[in-house]
Image (cartoon, helix red, strand yellow):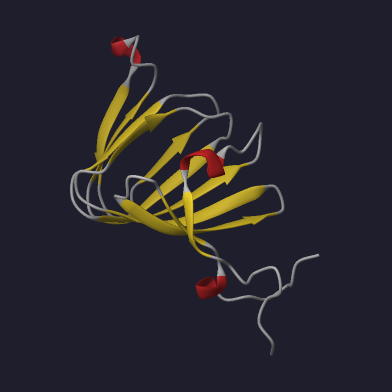
Length: 133
């Protein structure tokens, strides 16, 4: 059982083995929420079964959505603060931070979550026990 109240500073902190980003990820009720910071030049490209929403808070992010084997159907846009990209589950996405960025991401939990295969916990969370008061 989780606590009803917690604080964002008590959520697990993560990064990738090669660095380039850091963030806190909260898993709850069939979704997960990630608040992340990426360094300029950081790039990631993959697909996964989970649908996701990415909201860019600051910086510029180049987003390419669609199968790279079918370039005519890849949608590309440079996102700025306040922009949102909606990515259905199973759709390839290729992202490049053009500047340092801050973003929020929310994913569903359809299919397996292979997060720990690609990310490293840098600070354990306390959200299992929550805060008092």
